[in-house]
Length: 301
Image (cartoon, rainbow, N blue to C red; front, side, top):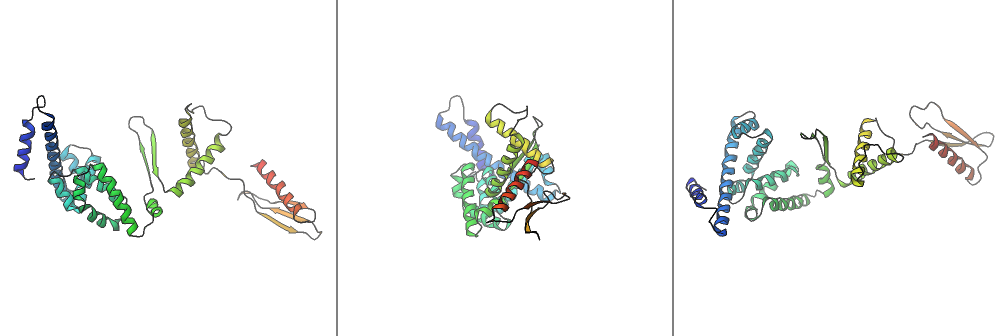
C-alpha cells in the first residue's frame, strides 16, 4: 500500500462512530485496522533491516528505537530476516494481505528443519502467499508444519531422525515464583528410556515411604516424586537402578568338584567369592549354586 491508500484507510476508520455504526460498518473498520497494522509491521520490518545493517548489536538498537525488550527486539530482527528470505510474503504484509505473525510462523518452522533445507521451505512459503491471506497465523503455522513433513520426506529424512534433530532442553527461572524450571522435548525412543529410568527411580526411592512434601492430589504427587527422583539421579553421582551384576566363572577342580568364581559386584571389590559344588549332574547342582549366589547378592544389595 502506498501512503495515499494508508491515509484513506485511516480516514475511514476515524470516521466510524462506534456508538451508532452498524455491525457491517464496524466489521469493515476492523478489517481496515488489520490492513493498517500489517502495513505498520511491514514498515517496522523495513526499518529493522536498516538498523541491522548499521548497528553492531541490532537487537539493542531495535529495542531502544521501539521501546521494547531485547527479547521482543530479537523476534523483530528474526521477522525482518525471514521476510527478506520470502519476498512475496513480505510484500503481502506491506499490502495488508497477511500479518507479521504469518512470518513469525514461518520463522518457527525454519527452526525445525536442517539449514540446508531452509531455502526450499522459504520457496514453498513464497508460493503459499494466497493461502496465507485466507488463513489465520495459527492455521498457516499448521500448513507450514505439513510442508516441513513433506520436505523431509522428499529428502529421505525419516521421522525419527527429524525428531532427534529437534531434541531440546531449556532451563529458566520463573520471575514470579522464583522456581527453577526445565522444559524438554525428546524423540519417542529416548523418551521411553527416560520414562523407564524415572519410573524405576521413583519406585526404588519411594516404595516404602514418601516425603512429607508430597501433595495429596494423585497426579500432583506423581509429578512431585518424579521431580525428586530426577534431582536424585542428577546429583547423587548415579543411582543404581538395576540388580547388582557379577561375573560367574564355572570350572572343575582336580578333585572332581565344580567351583563357581564370583567376580566383583563393583569395580572397587577386592576379592572374589567361590562356592564349591558336588560333581555336576545334568547341570542341576550348578543351577542351584547360581541361585544361592544370586539370592545372597540381592540381600547384600
